Image (cartoon, rainbow, N blue to C red; front, side, top):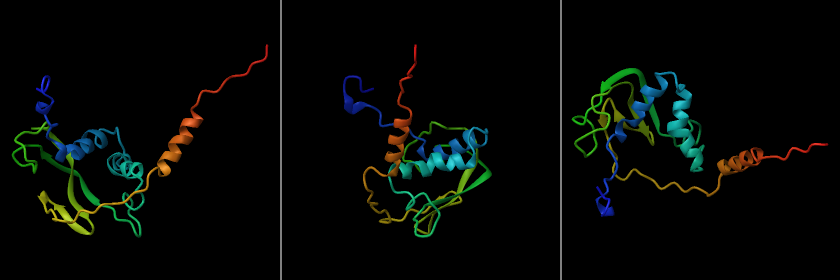
Amino acid sequence: MGKKDFSMIPKGTAGIEDRMSVLCDSGVNSGKLTPNEFVAVTSTNAVKIFNIYPRKGSISVGADANIVLWDANGSRIISAKIHHQNVGFNIFEGHTIKGIALHTLSQSKMVWTNGELRPLRGAGKNIKRPAYGSTFDTMHKKTAVNEPQAVHRTK
């Protein structure tokens, strides 16, 4: 679809609701990721790149982190019949996953608990962020360190 008409290209795929659980199951439970790496990959790294760390992505005084409490032993079968997406299929359909989100707190309010979504209309906020934060400084330093260096030899 969309080869001759760009407007007909499919708009992505369903399954975003389950991606963190799938990553927990296939990453942490397989031993490929530690729980700390899972948090970094799914949360902390992004807020650092967007230059809003430690305001977001940190559980500390003055921070405004969203907190997800995981049940490492909890499991469920992924199904389009029970997900919250407005689509009738799921790319992970039928997979049994171990490691599920039990509760999510956002702005000190429970927005997800035991499979129940509790959206808060109007609760979203625009977070101002300065351009070129400390992550970019680190990237420039790493680039400089990895630059090829000439090897001077005497004959």
